[in-house]
Image (cartoon, rainbow, N blue to C red; front, side):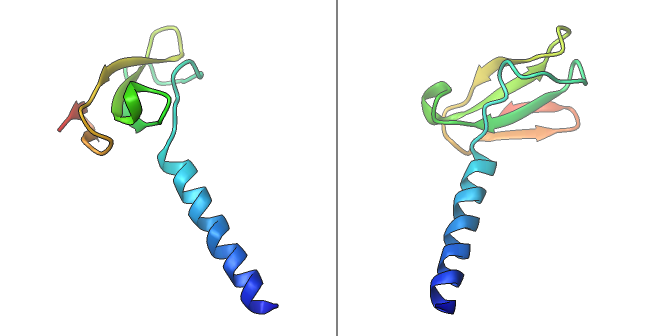
Length: 82
């Protein structure tokens, strides 16, 4: 029984990790206008990474799509496709 419980926990953690990396903030509220970020979600940009911004309307907006699922980098100077 302990083996089944441990297996269930491992599967649950793996599923939660997948949810954490695939995120679509577009349209959600934000509180730092002018801030940029990177994300990746199957429903946006064909599953490839994309750049989003916290607009002056206090909502995240789509800025640009990148060419692959992992080729976006967010820095203190902004977000860039790599």
